[in-house]
Image 1 (tube, rainbow, N blue to C red):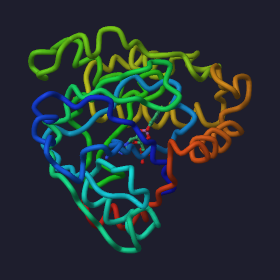
Image 2 (cartoon, protein in one colour):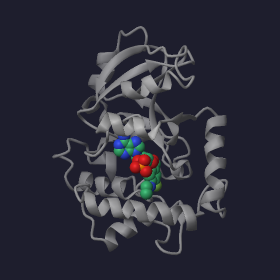
Image 3 (cartoon, helix red, strand yellow):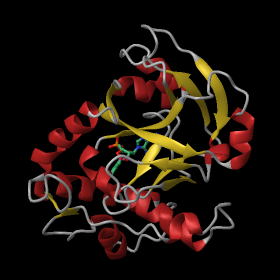
Length: 262
Ligand code: ZZB
């Protein structure tokens, strides 16, 4: 898979996590980015939060740029070490260990998002064996993200989050199609009566439908490429994010993903 890795700049860690990192000489004074692998760079305008798995192990790793550290799974760091993203070819340097639970409530700056600051939240279905284990959330166009946020809004105590971290982050209309209008994920979740991230079979169907519809029939409704077809805007937005240093290309052979997860 040809992913785009979006660099979500950490603004402030959750307090206990900040305390745990204080005094770590390799971390102090560096910029830390949570790195999210996406196939939909054109949807980055609609980011409302980022998801991690609470039980997934993450690390903070050195990159080829001495001032920047990447927060992701070790598996992703290993792949990146062979894609010219680590200090030297094949070299992995981990400077801290974290568990997803410790990241909940962290604030980040998500490139292109209409929200200047968004939160890191828990999602049940984040796979440690895919991408970076960090998932950026676009509830306007991803049914999984919309359904998960619906759960978090209904049961903040159960998910151990502050309701304010989800309350004022509504889905943003970013892509319009004749079939699903300009909020494809909320529309299809309503049509299919999907109420929760636990409705997995329905969500897989919904994801497939909006993926295809967005790609073939979508028109950008926001940003520099508003009015252009998604197919045309996608590579332009991807390249722009890479050029300004807010994203990096990341490749993951599909058979590798399958052998590690299965
Ligand atoms: C932003 C985005 C916006 C995404 C959208 C999708 C959609 P695929 O096709 O199954 O490979 N993702 C990335 N890593 C993980 C992970 N470790 N665990 C769970 N989900 C992950 O799916 C690739 C997409 O799955 C990625 O693209 C990411 O979410 C998520 F509007 O990033 B996407 C209709 C989907 N819309």
